[in-house]
Length: 123
Image (cartoon, rainbow, N blue to C red; front, side):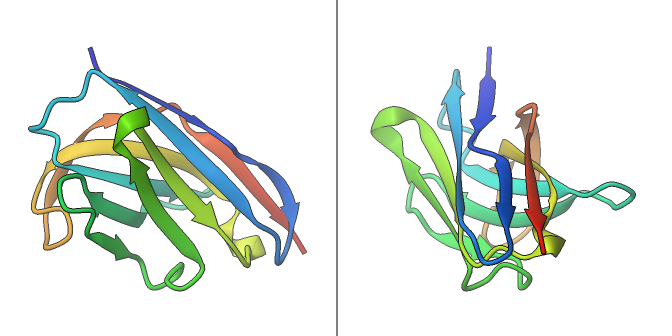
């Protein structure tokens, strides 16, 4: 059984930093991609960053490029999202996901999701 458990969310002022963690269990090698997504109230869920588990190659949405860093610690089965220079528009529920597909290059079926962790950025 796959489980993804996020932590690290909280409330910060604009310009601050947070690091999100996602501890994964039960994943097999077929889940070759992991990612972070976010959803703000009244808005659709959007992708933030992805990482190809085998190579560590990464992809970022333009809205977070240069401010957020996705990384993984395979020994700890943990995915991270370091978020710097946070803006009020980064306020959202952040979700960790795992799936299979082209990951960085294209379509990926994210079949496993965590419960989310709330990030609130005040101006």
